[in-house]
Amino acid sequence: MDIRAIFMGLAFAVMWSSAFTSARIIVASAPPISALALRFLLSGLIAVVIARWLGQSWALTRSQWRATIVFGICQNALYLGLYFVAMQTVQASLAAIIASTMPLLVALAGWVVFGERVRFLGVAGLVAGLVGVGLIMGARLQGGVDLFGLGLCILGVLSLTVATLALRNATSGGNFLMVVGLQMLVGSAVLWVAGLSLETLTVQPSWTLLAAFAYTTLVPGLAATFVWFLLVDRIGTVKASTFHFLNPFLGVAIAALILGEGLGPLDILGVAVIAGGILAVQLSKQTPHKREDA
Image (cartoon, rainbow, N blue to C red; front, side):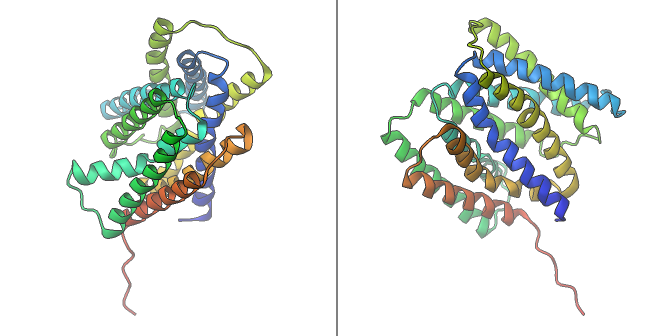
């Protein structure tokens, strides 16, 4: 893994983790589903225009369109839609912690459902991840977390896991930004239907809301996704996914810094254990280098 890939991975982790804090700010002043639909509409249009300017084509193959639609619905509409609704009552730090367990869920499903071989380090990572989640959930349940919001977060990360498993072998064919933009437009279309049907479009305008919306549209919404595609193309999904172990730490740290969300000892311990579990799982998937004979 070269220096450029390391910086790309770190940038992705910071941008991805910050999305929960900006989302928490947005849903405090705007209807969550409609706000997310507008975010994806703007991000998607920007991405498609830039992609066309760069010469990328929207004439995708059948498998690319399938991946675009599945990911647009499962990640952008279901995963993020459920999370935006949940974060009306759930703290950004808890939402980030739950979302960061996605690599553990993918590895667990690959082992249990698809019969994939998991090395001892991976099994240890899965166990550690489950223990970490248990520590945090136990502490939060005693503190009176909103169970409905918590349930939405769990359903959201499960939908992201399904999308990841369904598209493990999908490629963008070089049309990175175009695929990103089209995925966002698919998600926006689904979210607009839900938002206009279920929500009243009442907004409490403020500079804070505007700043958070602009940030989440351009940085986690567009830049992070684009950087992730480039990173996967550069070093592969397995190595790129190693950077997910940073997400629990960063998600909690950013929420504490900007929103002032407090953390108890069990939260901190749980975050550390989950991060270690994610790192162990991802490292277990990497093929060890064979020693060459002199």
